[in-house]
Image 1 (tube, rainbow, N blue to C red):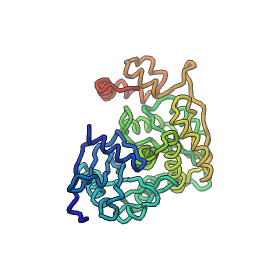
Image 2: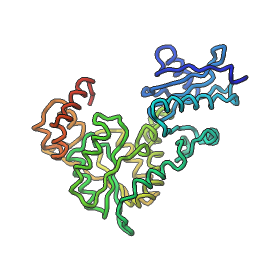
Image 3: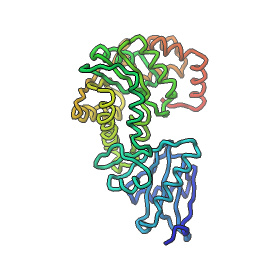
Image 4: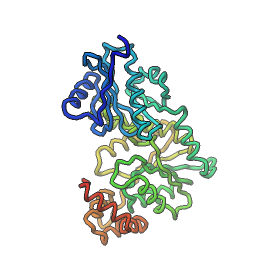
Length: 350
């Protein structure tokens, strides 16, 4: 069958009948449609038969499947080319994708390079040594500390609370130097640039602490492919393995990390599952994992969820006891008011 007998259908994303068609098609390959998808494409034959599909969410290509009847017809190349074209039109040039390890060569031939893999998943990007280049740039100005204990924390800080501050201060006392990585993915109520700045301000008094954005390489749309995993009960667990392998293989090497500190998690099952995987996996990379009990105020655990709730309610007097002055100053500022109004308008659920 010649390539010119295929045609493309685009969805921004698909809805109604076409969405159901895509979901049914993906089920055949043990894939689940991701509701966050922003763009999808069908590849069909002239007679309307579905030969393949693919989608994009931000900078991650996902939900890619080819009808076995059309293997060897160049379908994958057509779909990937269209997804890349759409991403470029949106100003996105650095792309990630997930596939099964057995398909590595197929995607390598299309300009993607492996980052890490598990028995279930292979993560690739379209920049050769992209992760190493990012880490090289990020470690340019860090202190040279031979034979030091180097700690690390990965946090969302949505926003930075006294609980986060306590975690950082406790960890900083327990090692010679501490690196704090703030998640860069914009899927939180507080945008990534604001979260990063509030963490930097909240840690400015600590001379042995550096604060970094995490980029797309830690706990992002790229490293948590739940759509890819058939068994949803273990999806977080399996995705955590891949994410932690990246941390153990690349971040440890670049930052010479010896310790990772994490706050105790009494509320979120997903975060608790991730923390349990951390305790299992990181020691194999010679990283010591230390769990620090949550900080409390008046017998109330300080959580970002509680802070966001009080922020939306406008209870700023109470917030003074739960966030550092730097965070509080932002919350009551014009920018903070603008964000609050925006969240109230969009009906943010906490």
